Length: 150
Image 1 (cartoon, rainbow, N blue to C red):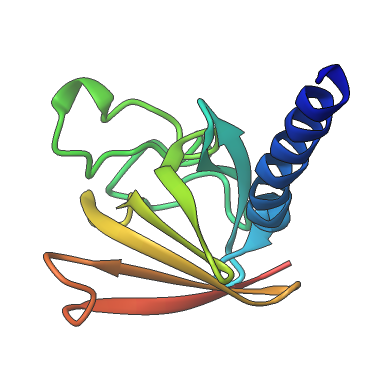
Image 2: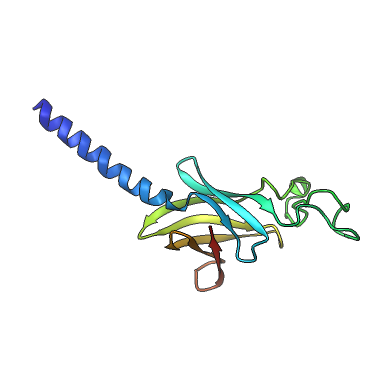
């Protein structure tokens, strides 16, 4: 009886680990489509999140009307006034994604600091180095897809 219980426990532990390993395929640093930002996807509270870890131009340029030239870009488009002084580098822009199987992650939210809007999101791993990110309002039909690369 003890052997049967141990065998069942080992089987359950092994099968539970497989989806987590497949889901972890998106972990790491990704270049956005424009190649002007890098986003690190990491695990957070059993789900998948992402934050900006690099910007091609991390500071406001000379003559900027959006911020003080030479200082870091801030999330000045955020709809919450208290968050408008948050630096873009380090900003969480993806949260709440879960692995849905078949190289797809869904149920999350994507925030675009360029316009201050948040969208429902879906990600599909097209290859080990290509990730399709779809942000949408309501249903996926009404949205936009970008491709990120490692």
